Length: 294
Length: 158
Image (cartoon, rainbow over all chains, first blue to last red; front, top):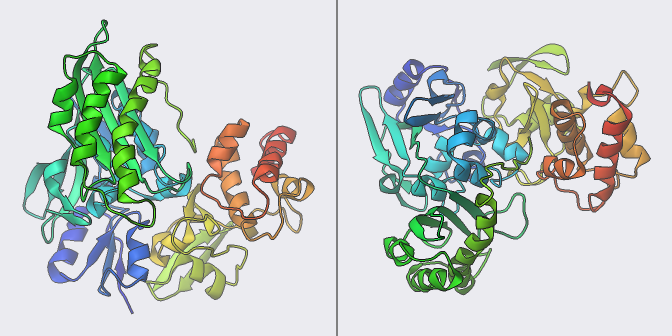
């Protein structure tokens, strides 16, 4: 009989990880319990983190917003600090899974799962998110792009857990865009996704651009070369085409049940052109975002 | 292990293996077969239940996760032996065909209408976007939820 533990504090969790090192941990379970049932996640004891108070909640200070690892996507979508400062993350999470998955799944779980298609990941890359990792006696802060090593692979150490996500506030951007290409709107796993943050000045010159793609490489794909190719140039189709050429050349997609590598390569490049349509939102200065399931 | 929770307004204590899925606890141990298992992997919504007032998928929860929670299943939504307004609307609008998705749809619509008593049709579509139906084409389900929301001042789902 498998043991299932639900610690309510970190102090209750640490002895479990210390004394029963075979224990697998999960939070929302939306990914983990599916894999576990298929026999992919061992047969040892389980610890569910969803009741650990220190891992819940979303806090704001003057310069940062801290999202607890076990905050659910629905809780993040309802959070005023996140809505006010990180519309990109809101857009991405509002198309993650389905209302039920958003009620259960957690941001820490999405990071630990490290799927190339994880909907929170590309936004966290462009936002420069830092991930808080704790053990009973240590704390470290690691940029998300250094933490994720490959599909399902992270640099999280034994007996260490993700405790939260730190996002730095920035008023620098006026275009926040997330788009996912999938078979349908709800419950789709991205074939290609793009997260973009841009600063475009009053003369339509791109002053800064940060892009990240999901599902086109073993981890989230980003391209300093493409970002540089558009910097200080007009926000036009022609300029985006130069970036798209770089992306078409550099992405490393695979064939799978959802799409061919060739389709992904084309779509990853061409999805950049949607930024021109997205810009019609920002020019009105509107940050209103429709959040499904609310 | 012993698990205590409130199920459809009644306190309950059950003794189950800790890795029992909630869907199996409900259907096999407690005989509440209204909740259905479709995909078993979080993609269809047929197993939706309400936990502390919010929908969750009972195929992706283990029994101990219910400890101390308030749980509602489709069996708890009726008024005695009578259907509630939302259930009646499903019947009236032909929103039930094979019926397999219906309990999950009604649980999900209940959550939607409790939080947003007068949703737009678009909000209804978004609200049930995690529940698959292979028969109706969704139109009749949206009609039913829309009608239930219109015809009652929040009474449909209390």
